[in-house]
Structures are given as structure tokens and as C-alpha cells.
Image: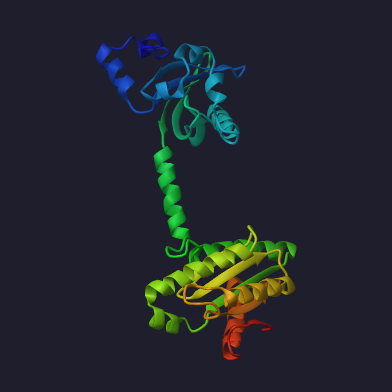
Length: 304
């Protein structure tokens, strides 16, 4: 249906070349009208994005509901709040939300609109653009910034961020919180004897073992080299030690591609104490790790 069947409110008919141009624009340009009783409709819609929506423009010229019903569960109240705030303050709408298109695919939509008071209510002039690819790329980059390239585990940055969150909860509510620091024993010898590719495989296999033994709410991170950290929310030291011993035993009997009982780990444990900072908790776990190393390796140490 051509866009000139729904001309902009209060404007003269446009030349054909302008109508053709607006139909080729990516996304959608629109007018949205809201009456004092809250009823909303689109007096004007144009742009190539309308076809993706799969709703007849004549229907939307009567009511905006067919489009609003396509919003995601959290997108609907967010957009309604933005519209209400814009109408009350006569401020622009700048928001994004997920919208179900004609093919049932949920797409991210960015919306920008400027309000204008008119005799029959509020009229917005705006545009909507599909930003799904941009959102996917942002999520990918966010994952990369939080992820260790080799093992796929969280990296140091992600650990520190999560540690801050869990320490805050522990300080506020006295929830138990434990931290394991884990180091592969004699890892340099492994690299020197079997090569760095095999050493990398050992790191990846160890990452898998750690993930298998812990719970979904726990966080395993590679800090660098052969050192790992395991953050266990809602876990007191006693329970953490049992998990650490189980992990240590499982590593010791696992065949990492160089024969069983050739790889061992040392683990240091610290439980958060109310008022502990991030640095204090890590330092105590590190001290226990060093104590495990100095006491002969292949053991779990608690106590500092």
C-alpha cells in the first residue's frame, strides 16, 4: 500500500519522488498520535521496514495496538513509560526494545521521536530502525572482553566484576562466600616435555573439569598462565573445602592426554569475612595457595 494513502497530519501532499524516497528508507518514519483518553494510532507510516512488520498500515491508522502487541514482555512497559514521560514533559523519546516481526523473529528496534502538542492530544514525529546486528555485535564484543580466549572461561576482568558484586552481597546480608585459587603443579615441566600445544590442551581440559564439578551459580575464571580462580557464592569454607578436595582428586586421576596421574593441582581457599575487600580476600586465598605449594603440592590448604 503506498504511503501517500496515509499522509502526514497537517501537511500538504508531497511530490511522487519524495513519496518514493521515503518508501526506500531503511526502517520506518512515522507520526504517532495519542488522544487525551490514551488511544494511540499512526496517522503516517513510511519506509521499507513496514513490510517486515507485517501489519497493514490502514489497521495501524486506526489503532497502534497491533504493533504494541508485538513488543517483548519487558519492552512494552518500557515504551509506555517513555511515551508517558515524553507527553508530560514534551521531551524526545530515545529508547530501544525488542519487537516480533512478521516472520516471528524478535528484532531489536531503536526509536527516536519528537513530541508536539496539538489540539487533539500529542503528536510524535519519529523513526524506527532495526539494530539487531548492532546489538548482536555488542554482545559478542562484551563476551570477548569477559572471556579467556583459550579456555572459554571468564577472565580476570569478569572475575573482579563478579567478586565485587558477591562481596557487596556478603557484606550487606552476611551471606557466606568462598574463593579458591588453583594452580597446576610443575606446569613449566609439562610445556617443556610435551610442548605448548599439549600444555594448552591441559588448560582446556582442566577448565572443563572445573565447570563440571561446580554449580551453575559458581564462577570459574582463568587468571593467566596456569592459575585459575573459583568463586563460590553462598558457600562456607567447610563446603568449599569438600568441593576443592573432590576437584583435586579428580584432576589427579584424569588422563590429560599424557597418561593418568601426571597432572596435579594445588588449591588455596579463603572464606569472605564481613568487611573484607576484594584485595584482602584474594590475598588470603593466594597465601593459602602458596602454602599448599610449599607443603609439597597436590593438596588443598585453608587457614590464613
